[in-house]
Length: 94
Image (tube, rainbow, N blue to C red):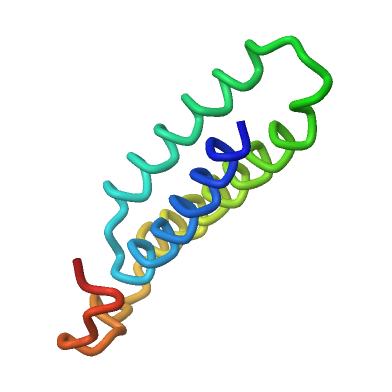
């Protein structure tokens, strides 16, 4: 169970990188994947996984907020650089 909630945290970090690159589609896909994990954790009726569920839910809410902010920036007409990372930065370029 811990691996699933950890996965939502890792994918959340990926969502931040994609959002910084203004890749809304990828952020939406990550949000969808995390929501599937959260629904799976909801279906398990066991108190011992409560903290893991809360952590996964918290990670999903962070991605929702990130996507909301990204959409607001795009709809607001603000012009922001498409890439904020160096092109040769292997840490952020997949």
